Length: 122
Image: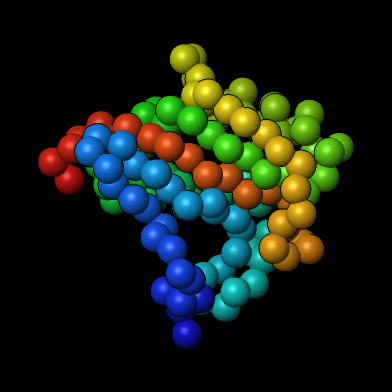
């Protein structure tokens, strides 16, 4: 069973020229298992997923306006900062970072974004 289809929320909400994406974590939506170990590997898995979802709706990482990051461990903050800085170019999106318990103990990071649709006709 596709785990994502069973969840009681929308993965992407389109509101005018805005895209609101639900939180993304490095979890295989079919098996319901964490796909990668460690913050950096989970980050890159999430980033590919975000790129895919944004692309399906006429947008991309360069149209991200806001990033909300949930970290499982406070000590990952420096690495998160480095990954954010090397991924998003100026002007960088607004950002919030929280230390939080995530839904699976192996998860180190979850990201949710708000983006503009670069091509609102899609």
